[in-house]
Length: 193
Image 1 (cartoon, rainbow, N blue to C red):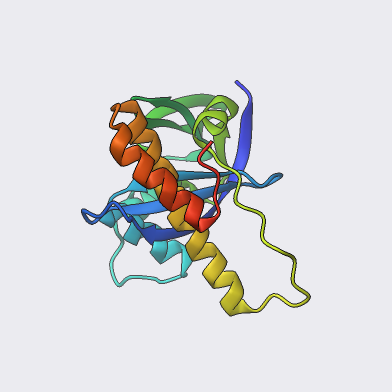
Image 2 (image 1 turned 60 degrees about the vertical axis):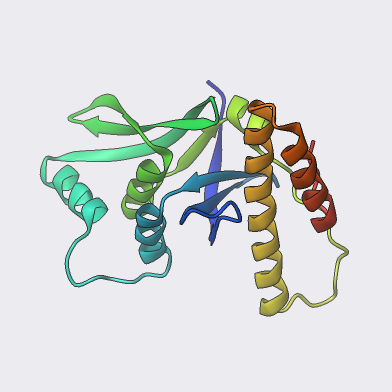
């Protein structure tokens, strides 16, 4: 399987609502981005690591990392390897005494573990080809302020969520709603493929 190393670009509330969040992964050696809808708990746990916040007591993912460490295992990588019926599938790859073992996982759980264990996050090329998108090109500016960069990240995260919603609507053959989402994507300057 060909795989692409990615990094966590950002988290944002989902425009689709329902308390969901959008996790955006970005390929390290490219520009494509991959939106993944995740739950509130998983997003909050991820935000703790990204913001370097240390809660008083260990959370579920911190506990999991401690168990892995105490058993003498190590996490090698996480791989998002499938997209089936608008659901992503991932594996956490472990090394235990020189033996490699893969464990099925939700991507949000796998990425939470990857962030805590400082290991690479990969996306299968076929998944990135199917669900990834290229951000709209913005005119180059001489100086890029923090505020402009933050606005750009928020815009890209919204685009990612809309792309994800568009894919879901097309899969469910809800073309009327898909057209509305497509128009919203076009207003933001993104490509609806």
